[in-house]
Image (cartoon, rainbow, N blue to C red; front, top):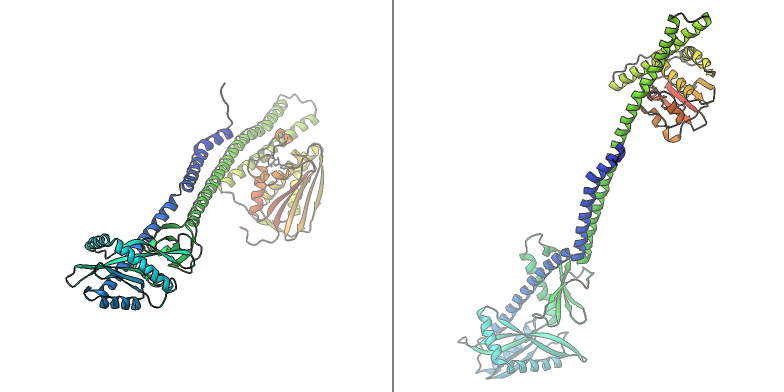
Length: 553
Ligand code: ADP
């Protein structure tokens, strides 16, 4: 069996296959991509990577700064003269007292043993007695691994790393363990031979208030303008309690458990370095990125489907117009054929002399006249229509007594009405002032409206024509009590070729041009045409022309 599709179905299928499918595929692909991004979180990974890079740079800078401080401390004691231990001890104490970065300093050499120099004014973090205890622990650890430290530091000096680090546990305050990281530096004698190892812990406040900030600022200054580092906020957190002990931007609140982090043991034992973007967390940022993309895709979808919808609508309109045109051709041919065959039939009958009575002959003559008038009317409509379509329709406006013109037109139509048993009611206001109209066009309008009233009257036999003044217009009303017009068609009946779907309309000949001509004439007169009607209730058409319109051409 062969599939037979209506043109509309064909267009629908073509649109679905050629447009909807690719558009849907495109949008689906975009959505899948977004879903993939949401699932695998590459955005988060990239951001994380960037933050990690920033953290590495700052940590490295902190180590460089700390090496500088270690070298400074060593410089204050060198050359270490082991033959004068008191002198060495005094210089150590002086350094601990004057260098703000020192919390605790310990010197050890096998020759002299250990000297402990805590910072004299107790800093916040460590009490004096505890600091002394810590000093002893530190001294003990240096002593225990003296040779290893020395070798390590000698190696370190070759690569310009002046201090080394070892995990160092400090037991502190109220049974709570607190930790610090100790740093070691090698001291040399006058001949630049290793003379002992100096260990020190750094003051927490100094780290928080000076060293970290300085390192951060230096990295920032070295970064090119608008680098990701500009948007990075760093922090240092206690790994156990989660307390933030330092941040590069104290005003920026909102840290997140999922912020990028890296170990910070080389500087402060049991601490981590954390980083986030300024203003929002990585998740928020990724979420914003997602939302923006999602909105974009959805917006695109709306635009694309909107476009499809409009294409569909305009294609449908064109198809409808094509259908109307072909209906029009068959309607018009039909309308031309009927009067012509009648004229021929009666003319032949007369010619052959078959008519017996003169009344009969009279009747046939009048039929021939009537039918030829109908033909003329139809052809006038067609000619007017084609002129209008070609944009070449010219109107000749002249001051006109409308009541007279309407009366005259009705007169020529009265016979037609009476023949069909119609009763014509007239209310013409003879007192209207002269109005500028094209007489021929105006009377064509009235004829078209009357013709419709007659055609679509159904069983009713009453037509009323009125002419009256309404505000600044002369209003011509044509009213019938026929089949009426559905609300939804009120606008469309004025379109060319349109004919309502009512069965009576289809059984009645017509071109679908009459009302579109009336509308054109109304507009050319700067007036309007309107309809009041509902199915079964009859219709009233009103043509309004402004009474005093000087601007008409
Ligand atoms: P035609 O009458 O040749 O079809 P028109 O442009 O004059 O074309 O009218 C368009 C359509 O409007 C008609 O086909 C009919 O459906 C509807 N129509 C016009 N006048 C009336 C009326 N008086 N009563 C009911 N329907 C009407």
